[in-house]
Length: 267
Image 1 (spheres, rainbow, N blue to C red):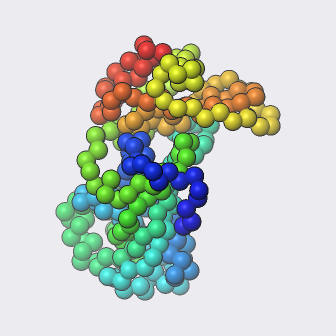
Image 2 (cartoon, helix red, strand yellow; image 1 turned 180 degrees about the horizontal axis):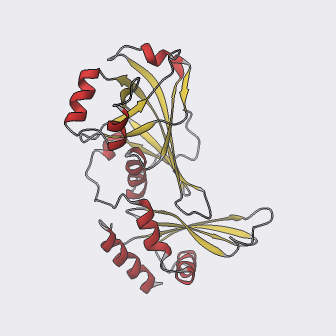
């Protein structure tokens, strides 16, 4: 994949980029796979991380696809593209994405059975292995490109091998913690970041075209992460995407509730 000029190369990735990469690779995103050497592309691929921290994918290629007959243990170059959407039922936007080039090696059936028995696969991968024709592959890469509203950040693989603080995996539950604060509080957060009163960053762009009344002057929660909350405030003339940074990483729903309450009190 070509590297665009706005990729930040001058510093190690921050917690935000590493956390986004880990969450998306762990299954918190939709995944497509392209094996260009084999002229094969799959739009919906189950993926996740093993208990040893390796990327695995599961797919059921059609009989005419080269991946059906590719021997286990033979590597082939692949590209993974992962998209993470907001959990808001009113406004569906892409919260972030990540992309990687790597080598996928299909696993022997005996190895798959052993890993399923040992509980090493994510639940979705383990479920698919019960279906006939499912092939499971291990993907090895040296870095991931993370794209969010702040730009494009390269994350080296070794950054994902370090322990990250625990974070709730129920995306809808963490989303509800933030939106339950109400529009007035979230608008104060957006204003606070834009005025420099709260830590974070803001990107403002023209709204473009006619804005629908049901989203006008509303703040939507785009994503909630270990490092903070991404909000989108849609106005008639401009739309602000605002990242509100947490002082510390919440590790559970109760600690997230306390963290957002602290931010609300500071706004």
